[in-house]
Structures are given as structure tokens and as C-alpha cells.
Length: 430
Image 1 (spheres, rainbow, N blue to C red):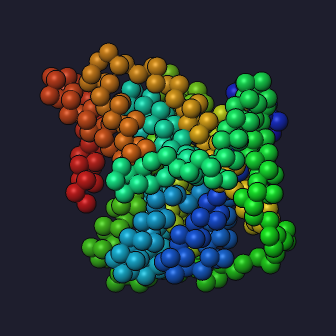
Image 2: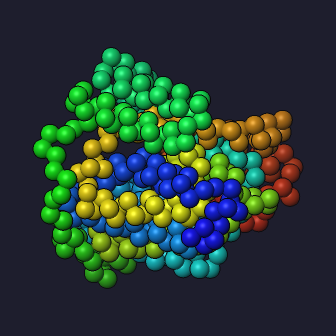
Image 3: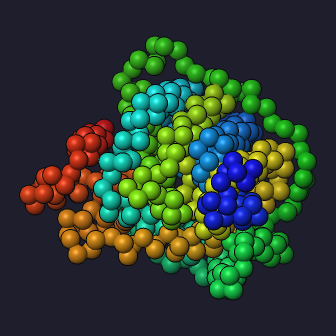
């Protein structure tokens, strides 16, 4: 196992990789509860979606672990599941079978694009400083998510966001968790994020934040039959509505995955000297396979998760981290009540601190050159404000092309970057 995952060569240890895998799983286990809840609005049965979510996540993460051998985990993407339920089904009036068909087609197209190295070429076309900014932008984004989950930041109709109720049990527990993890990190305690999550979960029991009422460890397994292989006919596949839905799925998933791979790889310091990601083609196959399998089972688009950064921060550097996370997704099928006990107040502090750790590449950006600095800044700021990794990349790349061209630095922009920019412009109109 050590030689297969090249653990020693990566400067890691088996124990560190296992702890990292557990941490990654705990920070993203919320998807097992959230995804069924969101897709149920489209009419899919919650129990079946739970099973599909767990199995599809395990399959995709196993591919990442054993084929790409990278420490990244995958699951149905947030935002994409919302688009599935509220835009395609409730907004456009389409059936959930129509939406699942679009997800299946997306997965198949991604398999083809990955095989033809198109997605790899897109990753390599992103300018160096924008690549560095992606990690920083994801850091702000993931910290913002953590602040929302903790109740420290809430919505406001006038100012969009505001400080939440600091006296609420969730906020108090999240702040306590933030302090606990920070102190553990200060003392360089291994597994600090994981220990913090466990401590907050236990403390939350008497505060009724960790819900244990009616807890049963073993329950009958739900059936996936109601959602298994449920697709529409050819007459709906060849339609303008399907084209628009398919393009949106393709665009958002492609650049969410690209952004996450670049950002977390930068933090893990596994990028090659030329800025490329090792075994990136295999990594891209993981989300393509996960999306295809997920559609067959009955869930929305599978993508690489930014919460993988939590495992990387714990020291995860190889596919063993992803393997542990994949195994836990399979275990969750049988022990789902145990994993779903972890409240948002326990994972929120870990996400906030991961956001802090993702900020380090900001010092490597060329802030002295405005043609490099402005695109990097826009990529950083648009990710949390637009609540989308993909939108941050769009603003970063398009502003890079525009500023370079108008500044007479046309040759700084590669041909592939121009092509990607054209696709981005089209996406704004679609």
C-alpha cells in the first residue's frame, strides 16, 4: 500500500492519510442529508436519493483514490443539485427524469472530453496568477460557507449579509469549536480538525444541537429502485430545453471541478513546476464516471469537493486519503444515523480554518503588474460573492484576456485561453 500510493515519497504517513480521509469525510458528510432534502423538492424519494448519493460518491472517490491516486473526494455538487431541482424541474416544469437524463448525457460527454484531453487543455490554459488566485478564492468561499453554517453570518434583505445572533447555541458552539481547533493547531496536535469536530459533536448533545432523539444505529437499507435508470425518451433528448440544461450542467461542473483541483493541489503543493496537476486526466475521469453512475442511480452531478482541502490540511497527500473517504461513504450506507449526527456547528469551525489555510498562495501573486493582479483579484472576490467557483474563474480569465489585449500584451495570452474565453462569453448569454 505504501508503494502503490507512494506515501513515503510524498512525505506523508499511513496514519496521517487515514486521519485526513476521516476529516474530509466528516466535513462533507452533510451532503448525505442535504442532497436528498434538495432533490426531494423535485419529487425524488429521499431514501433512494440518500442511497444514490452515498454510492455515487463512493464510486467516484474510489476512482480518484485508485486511478488518479490524489487526496480528493467527490460527491453530488451543491448548486448543481439546486439547479436540478429548482430551475429544471420546478422552474422549467420538466420531470426529474428529464433532469437525470441531462446529468447522464453530461457524464458521457465528460468521459469523451477527458479521453480527448480537452478538459486537461482547459486546466493548462488558465494563467499562472489566476491559478494561484483560485486557491485563495476557494479559501474565502469555504470560510464563508463555514460562517453561514455556524450562524455567524446570516442573510439580510438590505445589505445581503449581516452578523448573526451570537447568543444562539449554534453560534456559541461554533465559536468554541473554532477556539478548540485553533489551540490544538497551535500545539501542532495531529488530527486537530477531526478532534475538534468530534469534541463539538459531543458537547452539542446536552445542548440539543447534536440530535440524538430516536437514534438507531442500524436501520433497513432504502431501495434505489424508484430512481434507478429512470430516463426520458429520445423525443425529449433532442430539444432546445435539453441543450440549455445540458450546457449549464457541463459549464458549471467543468469549472467547479477545474477550480477545486487547481486550488486544493496548490495548497497540497503537488503542482508540477509548470503549474500542471499530476495525473489530472485520471482525476477528471473520476468526476465523469461519478456523474454517469450517479445519474443511473438517481442523483445529480458529481463533482470534486472543496472540503477535500480539510483532509489536505490534515496532511493528506495521496490517494489513500481518498480511499478512506470512499470507504466511509460505503460505511455510511449501513451506519447513516451515526454520521448524520454531526451537526453543522461541528463542521463549520473546520471549514473556517481551512479557509484560512487556503490563503497562503496570495503572497505568490504578481500584485505589481495590474494585468496580472486585477484578474487574480476578480477571481478571488467573485467566488464567495457570486457563491460559485466557476463564476470566479470566468471573471478571472475574461478580465485577463481583456486587460492583456487592451494593454498590447496579446502574446501573453495563449490560443487555448482565447478559445476558453469565447466559451465563457457564450456562457454569459446562455
